[in-house]
Image (tube, rainbow, N blue to C red; front, side, top):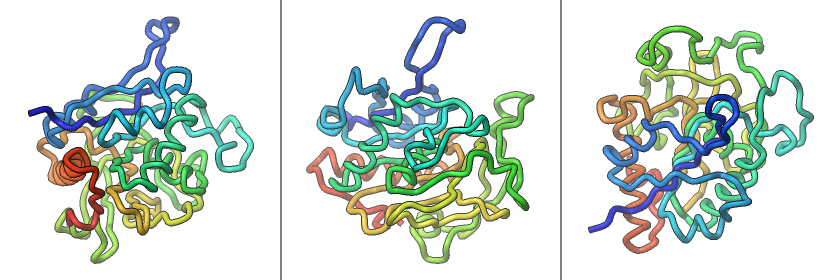
Length: 259
């Protein structure tokens, strides 16, 4: 019996600083295959190669991954500055309409880090270019030194809204997460519900209000050690259940139904 397909949004990458490639972290594929129980399929997120209708027809669900380039601020009506960092306009051109189409169809997606930010922008929201520059905010960026274990180590609490989908899914109102991001939500998009916050008030967990399908998205990186982490595992398991339901009969499964 074939597994349902999760399209993993890839990032543009240069090998040896000159050979262009589409890349995706192996931990994303591992989380999709081993925890969600689906077949990972890396997508070259570039409208020259794929279209949103083709992706919707080919994949049963989507993992909107993290990535070094940021969503271009023109996508939310602001001018680019040095603080906004690098961009990937090709990925913007695929993911933003893909998110809106999935919300409309009830097709499941899980947003992670940049993917979390893409969901907010796709729904009309905006982003801060650098969270650590805001008064009272902590530095959420990846530590520059250390092993992968040290960089992805749990670093702060996220507190969920009481009775919300994340609270019910995790069975706890507070969980420990890692943090490896520079940008964050400034203005929530239309229908975006902020369901979890870091201690400094930075939004860390969202969903799309009234969406027929699974739209849970997080600012941290649950793909790290997803099989063993008590926060990551239920998130990917619920996502996999929603993808299987879609594959079996193209039936939307709300995120709250898994809580």
